[in-house]
Image (cartoon, rainbow, N blue to C red; front, side, top):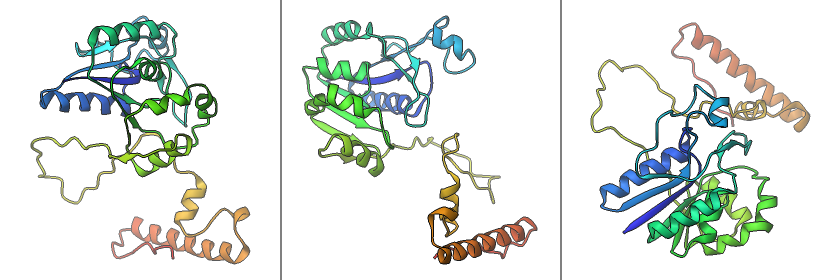
Length: 260
C-alpha cells in the first residue's frame, strides 16, 4: 500500500502539523506502508529563507518528501505559518499524483490552499483528512463558497481535539473522529536527579489574555460583570495574591483557594 501525506506548509520551517506528518510517515513505514509526503520547501536563497535566515531547517528534505513549491508567511488564526500559495504548485502536484499512483491520500488541513486544496481536487483515490486548527477561522468565509464543496470528497474526517472538531464542523458539517496527537516517548529515560522538579510543556507564544486570568481567579473584567460578582472576584483575586506572597516567602503550607 502506498500513502501520500499532504501538508500545506513548508518542510523548511518547523511546526506542529509538520512534525505530526513526519511522525505519521515514520509510524506507517514501521508498519510496512510506503509513504511520500507532499509539501513545500524553502531552500537557501529563497525569499522566505532570506526573511528568516536563522530559523528553520537549512538542509535538504529527506527522500520521502516531495517538494512542490515555496512558501510565504500568512497570518492565520493568531499564528504565522509558512503556506504554499503559488499557482505553480498546481501542475507540480498533478504530475506527482500521476507519477506516484497513491492508494490513499491523507491531507492535513484539507481546506488550506494551495497544496491541500489542489491535492483534494485532483485526487482519484480515497481521501482522509486531519483538521488541526481551533479558532474563528475567518478566512473560511472566503474559502467555503469557493472550494468548500471539496469537503464532500473526504471519505473520513479526523480532528486532533474536540475543539478542533467544533471549529471544523462549524464550517463543514459532518462526522469527525477525534484522534489526539500522539506523544513521542523515548525508549528509555533517566529519572534520577529530577526529584522535586516540575516541567510545563506547551506552546511558546502567550495565549492567555487578562480576561482569562481574571476568570481563573473567579472574577471577570469590571465592565463585564455586575457589582456583586465584581466584589467577589476582587476578594478572590486578593486571596490569590496573598497565597502567592506566602509561597514566595517559603510557606509551603499555603494553598491557593479554588474559585467556586
